[in-house]
Image (cartoon, rainbow, N blue to C red; front, top):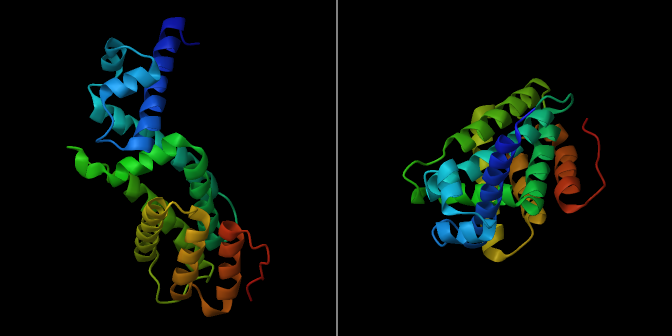
Length: 219
């Protein structure tokens, strides 16, 4: 059992991460100061520098927490039984849901977009995402859900790039992410999926991202 002092210290650390996430999500890294974070967290400068060397280290902590949350969800899906491509589409919806409901996830993703601001960028987040999708797409290939000429690692990188672009466009337009992702999958799936199974996976993607509940079964 953690001692009370250790528990309070961890509470302070988490409060700083959450406050930073709230402000990074609203205003971005560059427009948020340490003073802003301390005021929002109702914390002291001493407490801040006990846990973090500065704003950049705190930003990295937000990204790491976002990555931990997302990876936990992704690993649950990746370990499930069933269609590799269906699970990948479910993961797309899961991340969209987290972006809508979890400020740490939103802030962490925004910070990865802004990583040119940092001295130390955070490429590991994207590498891990590509790795998880590659595993699901290798399963989809073995299940003959993909076209014969499709390489899972290449396709995973394309999907991650497209998903990231959809997020950026959604933010810029003030639109909803779900329909934007539905359009993305509508465009990408024909080049990836075995023609006999395309109707099923297009309908499945619409059901997940746009509320269309009519899903046909693949042949």
